[in-house]
Image (tube, rainbow, N blue to C red):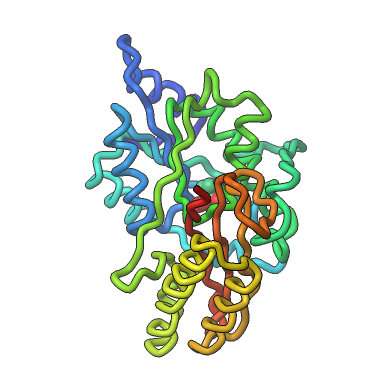
Length: 287
Ligand code: PAF
């Protein structure tokens, strides 16, 4: 496995991987501090493509003023060992100056899907994500790019950007959303789960259960508003401090849905417990 830290090195390594027979390249964009969720993306990319390129870049433009960019874990050596074991071919690990050279003034802003939900208290976050992911697509020119469905709003922003800016050819032929990896009790895996006390960790298992109950009620034709209120009160009863949002939304535009209409729908929830904000989302069958 190679590591590239300049654009020239990246391009020459990617060209070598492609070879004369046009081997396929899968890109897994990350900010490092890899966990099982990331490794699942790498495995999925390995199955679908001849070679996997994983980017590791802690992107400053997606951090807000109050968010501690400096404290974000950086562990390139440990990440590299995990990626090597998973058969990743190349790590793209630029520094900030390589990604945003002095004088960098451009920004990609995807309206609609970038608003509300996780952006409500993180203004500009998804502009930072869209801008860096657009650059990664141009830099690596992958055939496929892999993102976790856990960050469903991020995935929706990236899909909208790729569609609107014609990034799907010749750059990323397909953007693959990989289903969320879950703990035995259904809690979505997240690096934030480690901040939960034992008691809160047990209570957190209510989140996926309450979401499933709401989905069953909605799919059976129940009132959407009542199902979402029941979900919120289940979480508060279980020990959650507050619910930031519990919304049924159109899977592509993320516009809220109040009644099933046949369009693809998603239940999205963010709730806080013991100072930790947990997010989750699940598909709702609209048939
Ligand atoms: O999901 C992440 O880790 C980041 O938002 C991403 C997609 C790598 C962009 O910096």
